[in-house]
Length: 256
Image (cartoon, rainbow, N blue to C red; front, side, top):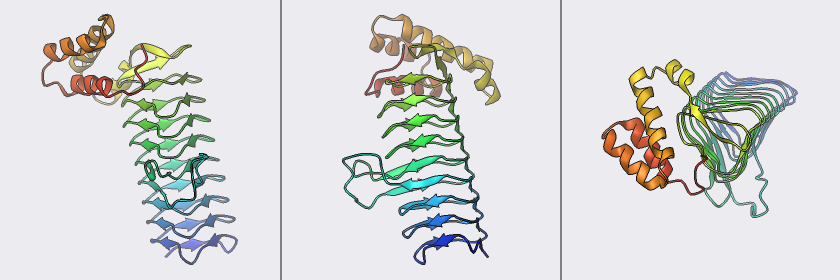
């Protein structure tokens, strides 16, 4: 049974699962689907197109599936999909998709801290920690287990690799490859995220291989040649292949 405050509004067309708590002054629009065991503290807005999983918590002022801040948006029916076990803190805004991709996606087990923004058609993975006031422009992709500090600004279409640590206040318009620390001004490669990788259970041997892979790629004058050399050194190592394929598929180029 859902607990809905008499001071909240839930559209009759909204589809709710079971055991949700909807606090005062929340607004749940039509064309929304909400799973089980979610908690909406006071003053949360869930706009049309939201698809929310289970066991999430939304803090006051959060606005989910907002109209995209994109002048090309013409009112088409699009979605904002949010997985399970997320903590969406105060004043977080997550836009729904546009005709470009149709859906903004936030995975599961993420912490989205106060006042951060996820723009239209972004794809956020799982296990992310994203700091206060960080902003993702349209169609940014963030792979699993990244940690992004406060007040980070990401240009549209950028991709952020898994297991990275991005320094607070960074701003960038190129892709950030996996397993690294990125920071300084302008944002650049600052070494391997050793502490983060150890916390995630990576062995010292694997960390050494990742470190040597970046040394090989960055030291080579031509990145394509560095990738070829790294693959030859460590055939079949999934972490090396992830790094190499990430760089090969980068459309904006990688930070150096």
